[in-house]
Length: 350
Ligand code: NAP
Ligand code: ZN
Ligand code: ZN
Image (cartoon, rainbow, N blue to C red; front, side, top):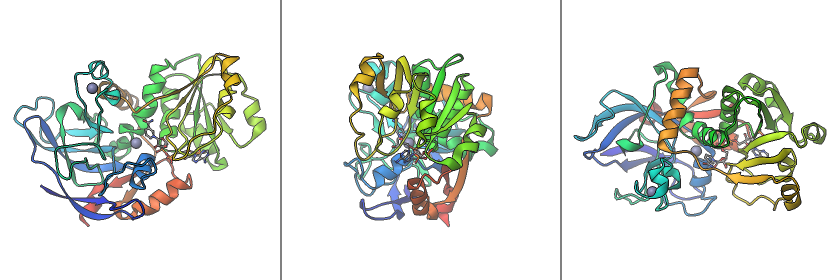
């Protein structure tokens, strides 16, 4: 079925209206009319091929929410009219050890990304949520239990939410722990909200003086402007866990030095250029770790969505028309986002 979308034809080309093909729903498929789609920094990295390997045309978007418009004959979990979401992955092998443990994002055969992933559908790679509709196997569709008026603000939970939730849970963040969140953008602002909701003493690290007040409102107990060496020094050796969401290359030693003995700095930002090599002695002499984490599995994504619905947690968003996407990218590059752009997909039809 022909579907209106926004995509780029090359790394140096802006996004523009394009028509894409969506398959007719198969027996296990759910067809979703997309209401809103969040704008992740990964969309920008991919559209501009900053990580290499982007297949064109490229239609990004993996923070998808909308309503079911058709289901295949064997679908049992969803019915027409249901409010649903699709995050960063739409398939995996389902049989490897990681899939078996519900960690499909680490599928050892290779998970299928919501965009730029391999598919039988023409032209051979997946298209994301900057489009009118999407067709996804029911096992990779999430139930959204937030009230309808929060639907747009729930969209960023599908990537920004789960990408921060998964490491916070994996490293058992909770009461009595001091946790840092670095970079108060789309991921970081969700990290602050979630770490706070988990009961940790939460410290927001920002390069933007202008975000100081906001970060407290998001749930931070303290805010540190990371360009201020004195403010940084005051926290030396005091953190159990720090989650670094920064989308650009930077000096990691500034944060490893803030960890306690046995503390962990977990990286989720994937910059175009590598970080400078960290100071190894800062790790060795305090048995500190630098780790990484990739989005989250389907079961934990549903767990996070339900937790957020129950606790009234959504993203702080600025809704945009699809025609404003290039401007949104430029603002994201200037760290001028409060705190996630979300596309109103009905504007694809105007
Ligand atoms: P974003 O909204 O642009 O936020 C990134 C924030 O990092 C900025 O708002 C800014 O916060 C800070 N920052 C930017 N440039 C900086 C610099 N040069 N030095 C220090 N701080 C800087 O991006 P996002 O959507 O949250 O994504 C963040 C990164 O995570 C991207 O690289 C994205 O591709 C990646 N990502 C990874 C996963 C995963 O599974 N691991 C999933 C999704 C996204 P302040 O103004 O507060 O300093
Ligand atoms: Zn993302
Ligand atoms: Zn697998």
